[in-house]
Image (cartoon, rainbow, N blue to C red; front, top):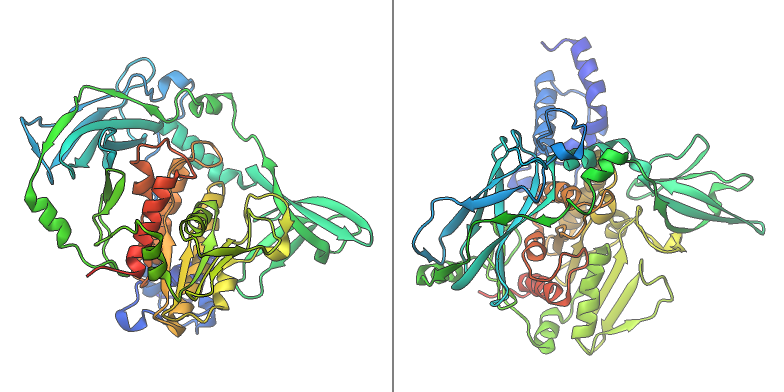
Length: 535
């Protein structure tokens, strides 16, 4: 089995994924913060055939996390796809009464536009139990049975009224379009690079992958991230000065457009489940009081929490709230907070800057949408920074020199007990083949591993994706796929994975990629609960 010919063949097949996968192998507790090698092949190539086979199997397990059922065949008309107007749901095992801490289950039946039951799964439903009156909500877990039927399961976490609310975000046929266009058309979102040299200027197309044959390639010397721009005539590559969003390319046909149209996307489905009244049960309150202290490594739960009277109660750990600015300031006193991410993380910066009056922003005369932004409270010894993650980033015209790769910046951070790193990375990657994202996660994971190796007391947050996208360029389904990979990539690393997916998907405010102020407040309060935990 272990012939030289077989080993050479397998090495060639695995070369493109070995570096990535090595860093996602489980490490024992002694190796928790050991920085991995820059490239897997820097190690002596004395790996057995069996070991390589096992490594490839582990990678397949990782990718299997985002496996999604596909329709058995391509539909020829939108009428054969799942219709939100024809789907329905009913209660499974109805009871005369319900208590806090119990579960409620409903069966969803998917039907096409002609009213015929679907025979296969793959539809993307989102479900929540909520009460507008109580400003309460909790996410439901939807299980696909693969035959056109689904079961949505809801925890009953509050006393009083509760009502089931289910939406069809995308039909299985629409999901198949999203998946296909993600992998086949990485250039459907493109960017502009602005060159200036000897009094002349030019604009060229840029992207993560090479655009054309004559290309300028820019490689970050620390992180290894690359960016490509078409080379302008008679201009050197080093004359690239600015970056901006370029535009969107249409990559779908008429049928695909109909499958993704607003009339069938993110639509409420009707059901025969009336509102219920949930009776109190003190044992559930006792369970919440016995949750562990908020700290790195706490196991996640589904659901991760719920809203009641507009406040989020974590079911992961003992989260608490900071209603007064003074409490938040005391928590952050002496901290160096560094945020790397997109505009959904910039909302945290904006919230804290506004909430804590003594925290004053310093104008660095940069593009506000990409940063860097900085706010300080010199008396409290508090410094808070935000900057966009590295390219790709959809933003207005900004200097390339102001856009840093997050892995490169983290390599220059000493870390320590007063350092808080907050990272989110997903919204600007939804249009790319999934391996582009996986490779980026590899580099970020390596940077965080090295940071924790030199300064284990550094607090590192990974903010999850949130809901709100509903198009071919940024669907919730695409976001969910990346969110699953994001969580898997950093699981067991001694970082805090802050789940905001549930927090954005079950609130009463309309779905928005940029959640409303009350959602942001609850997100930030949960983050502060880890920095200043309650025993």
